[in-house]
Length: 417
Image 1 (cartoon, one colour):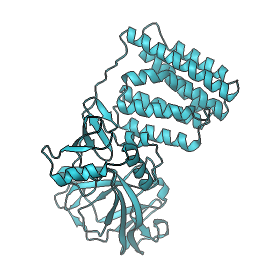
Image 2 (tube, rainbow, N blue to C red):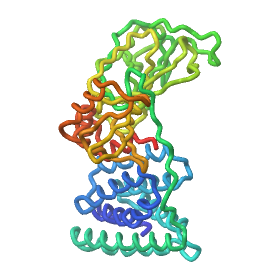
Image 3 (cartoon, rainbow, N blue to C red):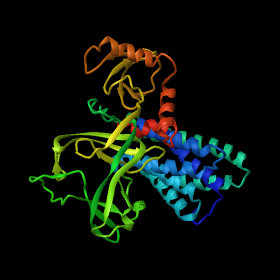
Image 4 (cartoon, rainbow, N blue to C red):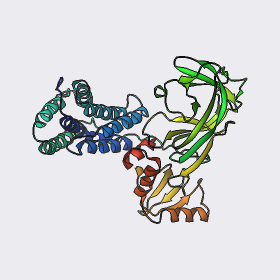
């Protein structure tokens, strides 16, 4: 296998075979988040006989990397996401180097999982057999590889279970219930803007231009930091994470002492994170921060989100355009149409005792803030969920946010368990 260059469809099928063999193990001992994302990714590789489109491979690699970053570095869940990322990279670039990385990763993983008499040789042989199968026509190769890989994966997972090496009941982290008293919550689609405000350039260099923050930032005399009241903007914006604030003219055109303006052009965004700070956070300015949200512009997938503070003097304007499950609050409990008691976590996650589930509409509000809710809140939830279903709610959010995800991936991104 090392040194082999495959056609894109051959690489896609070879990668799909590697992932399909590992799927029973992931289903048995991975977290719900890992198992759902893994299955969605494997199905994407099989689509079109392995001819995975580059945008899908990019999406899988990016989302897999984000989910991996949420895990303990040495956990089984992190290993699972690492395999998915390697697989997407190998399919996106069907050349020796990424393929060899996936070879090593999957063989090593089976070796770590296996008993003392199994050093990963079975997986290495399966990879060679899969490579030989790709010499057939695409449709025939896809069918054969999928059948063989699924059988081998099930057999190997059963063998691990028989040797007591398969943990079929992993410990699930506690559900994190975000605060519901922030003006904006995860998943909100908002319109943001800030008027262009004059200021002056305090420093200009090869990589950054710093400007005096024009909204009267008050320095904190008790801060552990020593801010000077200026904020730096990159000369090359592609080298830094997106930030809603911009300069006119841009940083690349400014010299020290030049007049310029700071502002936020009208932009639609969605909220990917909300935070409360207790005690308030020290960033060098007053007032100290007790709350923030993180934004991404609509249409963007996983990336470093921009933190926005809601307690400072700048005239930052934000208007709510869409809130999924807008009749519910974080932490509400509801009964669904299948008789299950579920707890809601924004933007569209529901949890029962055995993990995350997809609710059956209509929903009946049972408690809010741990007590019986007012009748108008009960009526609002019943009315909002009388027609349609959970999938429709996610589809609406995907339309407003323009996020390049499937419904399954959208749910995994926001699941912090």
